[in-house]
Each structure stands twice: as C-alpha cells, then as structure tokens.
Length: 233
Image (cartoon, rainbow, N blue to C red):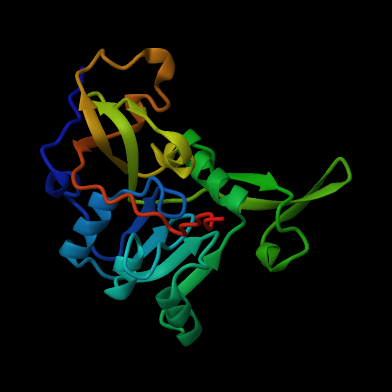
C-alpha cells in the first residue's frame, strides 16, 4: 500500500507557487478546504487562478484570498455573496470567467477522466459560446468546452485513510469528488483519518488512486453562508 498521509497542511501544500492554477472544492461554504485556504493565505502566493463553484464570502473561504489580493483570475459559477469580489471585478482588478454550473462540474470531471474536451448544449447562443467551436448533433446545437488544467486540487472530505480513499458527507459531495484527480496533484483534507481497511469499500466515494496527499484537518468552523430561521409565533 502506498502511504499518502502527510503530517500537516504545510507538508500537504509543498510545491505550491505563485502563478499556479488551483481547484478548490465545496458548495457555498459547505465542504470547502478550510485548512488549505488558510495555508495559501499564509504562503502569500500571488497571481493565482482559482477554479471553484463560488468565491466564498468577504471574510471566509476564498474571500480571504480575495481580501489579500492573491487571486488574479476566478473561474466560477456563482459569486453573489462576496462584496469584495464584486468590487475587484467591476474595478478590473480581478479577471473573471463565469461558467454554467453543470459545465464547470463537467470540466472538472473531464479532466479527472482524461478527456481533453466535451460538447454541451449549455450556453449555446449566448456569450458563453463566443469564440468556441459549435456542432450539430441530431438537430441540436452544442458547444465544445475544454477540460480544466490545474496544478493542484484542494478538496475536503468527511473521512479518509492513508491510502487516500475518501468519503464525503451531505452537500460536500458536490464539486469535491469531481476535482479529485483532475489536477497534477490532489490534496485531500479530512475531518477524520481512519486506519486503512476501516472504510467500507462500497461506501467509498473516491478511491485513493485519485489522491496524492491526505492529511487530518483541524479547527473546522463550518460556517453557514445564510442562516434562515422561523420567527416565533
């Protein structure tokens, strides 16, 4: 068995440099790699491109990297919860590539599977399709979308073992699995590290072959993006 466990987040992010492209899992603030993001802030890497469904909020998640002006380009689907993101985009400080949510997920999955590109009907006839190849299949038009290319993928799982096998929980099982193996190096942080053999094979969402480094995360805040409560009657 190949032991992919590293001691801490500092070892897990070895080789990270300015100018790289990173994938970061999560949906809203759910299932984001909090430890990896905090370490990227500490490392002060600059001019980076981030591929993520969203950009966090002003003081949490990818919002921390935006506050520190570390992100050069953001490739996302939904960015409506971050005022600093809006300010940087409108001022021209931040390059933004908005991508339909399903297309963003499939561009990750295609990279994971080794496909260079795929056709999708999403975005045909809109700005999304400008400059891209289109093709008719059975009377319906499709847009050719290239798979993502990234240096590192940072994902967050509920449980994992030293072989890199991962189990995700709830909504965190969204972009995280698709990003595993979709970059040159996949780094997984987990809430609970268990001995190899303890995970029920039928419950494993991502096999260890898609993961290069794994570590036990700490101090997860698990913040709620928008809390809605019922008023007392």
